[in-house]
Length: 401
Image (cartoon, rainbow, N blue to C red):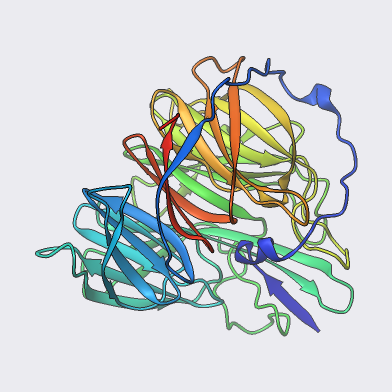
């Protein structure tokens, strides 16, 4: 018997101590620490079962098990729930007056809501079910939504991983009332439900993980990924794949421009800011066969990229942090070459929120604060960080209040 696993489940497990990896494989960064607390908690709202938050003007749209909660954040220190609409949603995004939401699963719903004419009352316009597993936050570009998907499969008898999968899906939204899957980038295994799938697994998409995506220019998307495939979880190399989306119905991987991050097995988070990008990664792959956890092993790695040539990103510097990578989250761009990302802990390890200043890529300024619960997703607006966790909607201001 087998079973599938997605990133959504990572927070349930604890990692065993990782093996050591050669530090000389990474380009060294001189660590500099800030002197003041990087964030101040200024507002919060108890909302059960929330998993993501996106912000537009003075409204936060908080996605979760109970639907989409509409929150007035005109006074961030006193957020007010206005309305709750729609269906459960694991993650969501906003583009102009359109909100796209997906619900994680082995065949996931993709829904489009209109924020016009009344942004306080999103209206469901169209939906479809995509026959692929465990999606990430959608990225809307013109008339398409791009969604990464990720899973791996393991035998529940011994937690032995036997396959790893991921892909980039292009969903046409030109007809908002009838969004439809347009094309799939790798698709070595096709969609779920095809003949020949392992019972309980449902292999689909490509043969390696795709964690996150980010846009570098009008026709280019970067993917965080790995060379690890099948049941070989520890000998891969974390990499950045470059995808040409000039034709959304025929995506093209620029294989010659792949960027590998030495000393990593999986690249996870990615945020682009101007000609620079910050990547969060792991020195280890999935903890294959452990009775304790199926999460990532190793430590968090931060890598700074030059993306001035969108088709050919270059590694500027990287560093291993003294922090288990099982809890590393996606990176979000702030401003002025600053980035934030969450990292959840286990047992006595605290959940953290990191602030990284990459103004000088060789001398990162890195700091963090402890947060009350694991942050599943976050969004940034101006100098404020909006986080979704079991503690509800928590709003942080960068720096001391």
